[in-house]
Image (cartoon, rainbow, N blue to C red; front, side, top):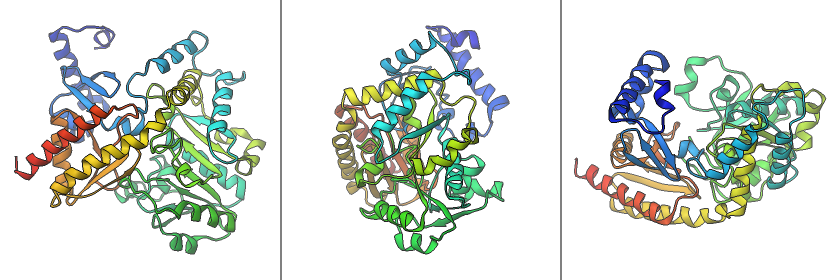
Length: 426
C-alpha cells in the first residue's frame, strides 16, 4: 500500500484498494478497538487531503472540520508558510543531534518568552502535551521540595502515568491503578475547596484556564486570580495547562490572559506545531527553573525540539502575529455561539447549554444518547465534531482559527438541519 500512498493521483480501483487495506490493517495490526468507536469506519471514510477548514476523504467526500484535531489546526490544514518553514529547516538538518546547540530551539524559546505573560522565560520541548505536563510535575517537585499536587475535577492533562494521575476521569484511570501518588482532587471553579486542600506539602496546583475534555467549562471571573493568590500564600507553584487553550484558541494568546494571571509553569502543545509537526513545551519562570538548571537532564527528551518542529512553531507564531488571526477569534466565537444558541432555543428538550470562550465551544445535550446521535448525523452532513472525554453529553466545536463567517454559518445551518431530523425521529 505504501507505493500507492506516495502517488499524487489514484485510479478508482487504487482508491478502493487503499480504503480496504486501511480498514483491514486497522483490524489486524493497528488497534481493532478504534473501528468500534470511529464514526469514519461506518462509512469507510479514509482521510486523504486537508486544506484550510476542509478535510477530504479518499472517496471524495468533504468535511467542515470543527474538531480541528482537538485544537491542533489553529491555522487550518497544511498552512503553506508552516510547511515551507519545515522544508527549509530540512534543507539544513533533521532531528537534533543532541550535542551541538540548536538555533531553532533557542529561537523558539526566546519567542515564547516574548509572548507569554509575567516572568515566564525558560522552555523545554517535548512531542506531546502529556510529556510536558509530566515534566512540569517533576519541575514543581524539584523547585519546592514537596511531592503533592492539587488538580481539578473533570480535568484532563494526558494519559502517561504521571499526567493520568492528574486527570480525573474514572473510566480511563481505573484500569491503571495504583496511579502515581500525591495528587489531590478538588472541584473546578471552587476556591473554598481549593483553600481547604492547600498546605505546606503542595508542590503545585494544576488547572486548565478553560476545561476542554471536562466539557468546555469556563471559570468564574475571580477563579484563576484566586488560585494565584492561594499558591502564593502557601508557597506552591501555579501550573496552567494551556495545551488546548494556548496559541489563540480562546481569543487571546493564552487562556490565562483573559484574567491577567501569570503562572509559574505553563504547558503548551497541540496548535504549537501549526498542524504540521508534533511539539509541546513546558515553560516556566526562574523560581520554577532554578533547581532544574542544576541538572537539565531531569526532563531530557530524545525527539523533543527537533529543527522541523521548532521551525513549524516559529512560523505558526509569525503567521498568527502578522495576520492578526487571534484578534479575529472573539468575533468569530461570538457569532458561532449566537447561531448555536438560536438552534438550542428551538430545541430546549434536547440542548441543555451552549458555552465556551473564543473558538473553544461546547454544546451540552440533555441526554448522552442525543449527543451521540447528533455527532453521528453531523458526520453524515459533512461536519466533524467529537465528544469531550470527561463529559460525553458535550460535543466540542473547535474549528481552525482561520474559519470564515460563511463557513461558520454553514456549520450552524447543518447543525440546525441535524437537530430538526433528530427531533423528528429521523
